[in-house]
Length: 66
Image 1 (cartoon, rainbow, N blue to C red):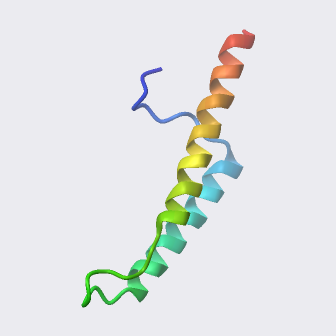
Image 2 (tube, rainbow, N blue to C red):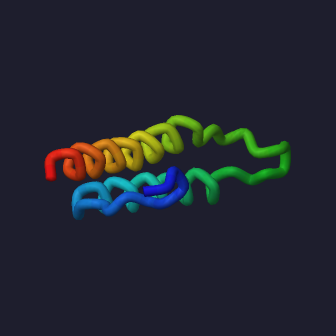
């Protein structure tokens, strides 16, 4: 699998990612952008990235187990 290809996600991972995207959207709506975007979303982005990375590791373990 190439590094830019998304791993297959479980139902739980999909739900988590949907939750994080919804929270990011909510924060984006709350940000008025008048003063350069003061709402920080880096914590949610890290959580999102962590779920994707865990899915990649899970797939690698499954592939090595075959």
